[in-house]
Image (tube, rainbow, N blue to C red):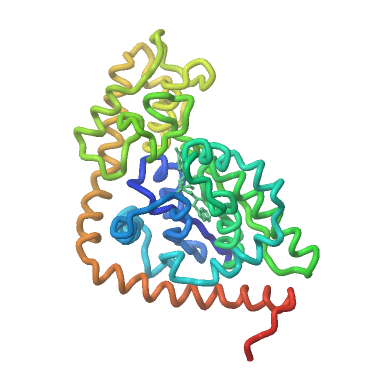
Length: 330
Ligand code: TYM
């Protein structure tokens, strides 16, 4: 059976970009594959976090995973920090990753510009921890949005390098990036990716945004000065983003959508897309309210799943330790 691994940072409220680009595509994989979906709390430490908030967000992200349709009976849903092998393998892989490779990461360049007062070593070696997450479980497939593609490539390079020195140790993972929805753009600056850390709240739609906020944000979405509803990323990024969102939400093809809106107004498009998103989010929000209120249940799921994950992780970590010459404790 193929293995799947992916994760989201509990670093804020999730946007429809996180859902359409990643989580939504995780759901059907559960039926066929052995899936691990992680709340990657260690990754959030690259930015200063308030402890009480981080705890709350980690638990809420598990509830949100479940609300989106991830089932802890089918998939292993767990917290990264509960399995210490992630940190242990990350250190080892740090010694197999070059500064030059990490220097080329566009996300590091962006983030170090935004967090100029705290450019810590963790921010720099962040992709190595991500590589450890994936390689520990010998994942075949990693379902992610476009912005994580470069991190997956470095993961493959490091795994390949290690395998060449010590013989077959890691499965080389493939990225699984959806054709539509892999890069949802900001509703205010459609040349930029939609991000939960944008300071303009109208730029993103949160999975947990109430209906009126969703509609308001779509109505304010930036389009352009002509009036044709046509997919053209280059010349019509705002309209194209709305079409992509609608396509990803409804499963309709781009060309069918262009036909559907022939001769209609931008106002109409925004209203229809907003409505489709509201309908998509409604059941998720209801289930989130149920799941997030039962903290005991959530903690129990984390405990049971961490044990399963730790067992799998330990196998790879032991193999790596043995190969590189670390003495077993005995
Ligand atoms: P994170 O938490 O930033 O985002 C989680 C997932 O959401 C996708 N995504 C988007 N997709 C489409 N449009 C957008 N605007 C958008 N914004 C975010 C991301 O591509 C991602 O798939 N480093 C990762 C977390 C991570 C991870 C891993 C992922 C840590 N270890 C191992 C996969 C495997 C991150 O920061 O994602």
